[in-house]
Amino acid sequence: MAFRTIIEPFRIQSVAPLRMTAPEQRRSAIEAAGYNLFGLHSDDVMIDLLTDSGTGAMSRDQWAAIQHGDESYAGSPSFEIFRDAVQGLFPFKHVIPTHQGRAAEKIIFTVLGGKGRTIPSNTHFDTTRANIEYTGAEAVDLVIAEGRDPANLHPFKGNMDVAALDAFLDRNAGRVPVVFVTITNNSGGGQPVSLANLRATHAVCRKHGVPLFLAACRFAENAWFIREREPGQHDRAVADIVRDMAALADGMTMSAKKDPMGNIGGWLALNDDALAEQCRNLLILTEGFPTYGGLAGRDLEALAQGLKEVVDHDYLRYRIRSTAYLGEALARSGIPVVQPIGGHAVYLDARALLPQIAPLQYPGQALAVALYEVGGVRGCEIGTVMFGRHPDGSEQPAALDLVRLAIPRRTYTQSHIDYVIEVCQEVAAAAGTLRGYRIVAEPRQLRHFTARFAPLA
Ligand SMILES: *Cc1c(COP(=O)(O)O)cnc(C)c1O
Image (tube, helix red, strand yellow):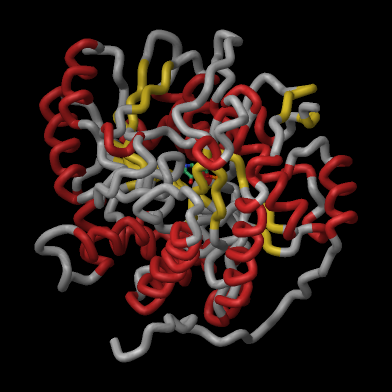
């Protein structure tokens, strides 16, 4: 490449205003929200990096596909267009649309979960873990040791610890209904899983007669990392790598709000006829008829088009490179970030940046609030607030206290990101003055969404 600048491989055709706010406005807004960034009005946020889920910009061709949507209750051709697009990448026999990823999780774990069962993964995402635990089953994380070390430069830090999985399946024979692999590993820093590791995981699952499912939300980003980093993969089409990943699994859950470029949507796909039948029955109970699930025909059409766009190499090169651009700039300024930089987000290591704040005083929350107060940048704590409360009521520090700056797809330009870099630098320069928080109210599950906090004196 002759030029260093990675230009966005699109031009802007439709825009939304971004409201400028002042620090004093933001301080009162976050106080009113109980210092929970999920409680803010989004008009009070300038650069919203809370999540990359459903926040991306749809393309001209996706909006055109919306017009093509057929809203028939049963047998809509929009379903066939959607199903064919899914099966083009993930050739599972049954494709079951849901309104988002957690609805697919709710259905599969209602069937496969329950008391006495245990479900391992490289790392379960928060909604996955919550849906498993809600059934009385146990959720276990078996990522490789390198994946737990924020500074380690392993190229595939999302990999399953295959030896640990083998031993786990031995120890828990008859209690494991399914093994999950999350690609990319969201809670572990957006880190990819290699094809070789998926093959080894597949072999161990076969040996024990346990099905393997992908939590495939960021499959295209994962495949791009495989293409970039795994020996022998560099000349391959991303779509072919995706089909290789799918061929190693028996099914998948999906949030279409991630790589399929949707603002809403998800699906469950699998090969087993009897299991699919049970899942469809639950689908009808809670989501809708199997040819629309929880979605409108127009949504199904937009997702089918998004699936074509997300495996485009120009898009993925820009996507992964622009995330790294943010992460590398922060690292150069001495801000501790999870390395290597993940696909959809940069994860700040709040525990390392704020050593004066004990994990149970929520350093990630303190950093996330400071980024908002100083610059109107909204990130998301991924740490002890999100994972510290256990089903038995106890509270323990999470493995890591991170703040995730998730990049919505095709939404912000490089100058927006340059501003975010400046805000992070300003907060880091005053890191020693930040104080922790205590929780004043929290719900029983998924407390990070609605808990209220108070700053410690
Ligand atoms: C987003 C996400 C989910 C949940 O999907 P929703 O569409 O938000 O319900 C599950 N697993 C992973 C890895 C995710 O990133």
